[in-house]
Image (cartoon, rainbow, N blue to C red; front, side, top):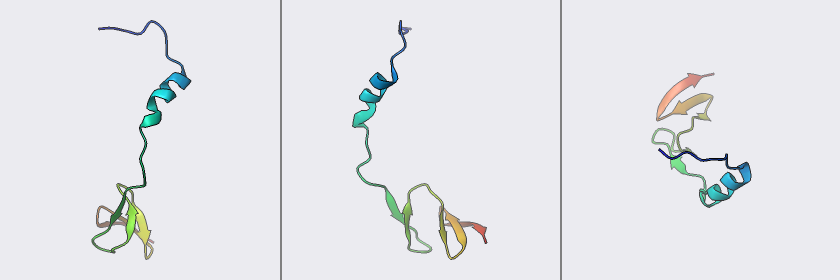
Length: 59
């Protein structure tokens, strides 16, 4: 297997990754609360923490 002779700099790595961008945040509407939230993130609604359509924590 080929191995690099020298380590690539941070700036060179970051230049390569500049094209990978998310255009806008991915929002999803919850089936239980019908509230928009970030995809794969837990969110608070009425002092309850929801994740994947289930109550995870209550205050």
